[in-house]
Image (cartoon, rainbow, N blue to C red; front, side):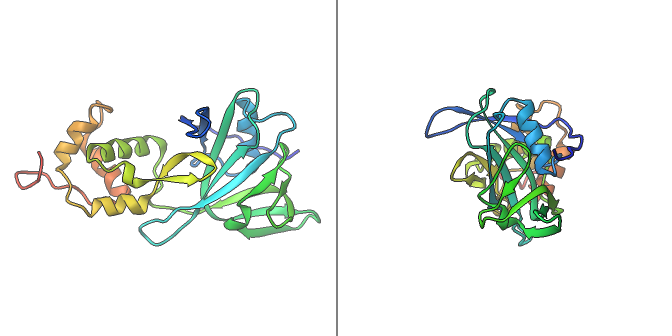
Length: 236
């Protein structure tokens, strides 16, 4: 059995599959999970993976304003477990390492992981038929990768300026949820924005203790140019 490292608690989000109208819970392990064993452990912990069930691993490329396009990886049981339908997001990566059947450690491009299938013990068959285990992502440092709280603040700010829908993209056609596309966020930032004061006023409805300075930092981290304040701003 693979050795599982200690994993911090990860945020949970609830989505609805638009086709089946059933609930899907997503464990956001993008800032805490690095190995497939960790992701499988979390799924087993919440009852999302049946004892002898398999999981499908999917990769979606996300474009960033700096031109990079790391892969966002999702680990989803093929069938719901006793705790219902769950999926786990794990870190953005451009490659992963795994051990082959002869014990050799290899590095693969992240696209090689798309449509791979794993058993509950982390034995993986890649789409080309290659069998590996002890799979670990090689995360890429992404300036625009916000933590869970910062992403919630950013989405609130995007709603305040009416840009949230245009900044979201579906992670994969088989997965019923969306993630922020930071290239689209940056594009929204090139538009004429309300003042920081006006955005802050709306965001305070969801985050009453949020300072204007923290909001400005989150917007800057996401690639949004800082909105103007003062009498020349469009809204204040």
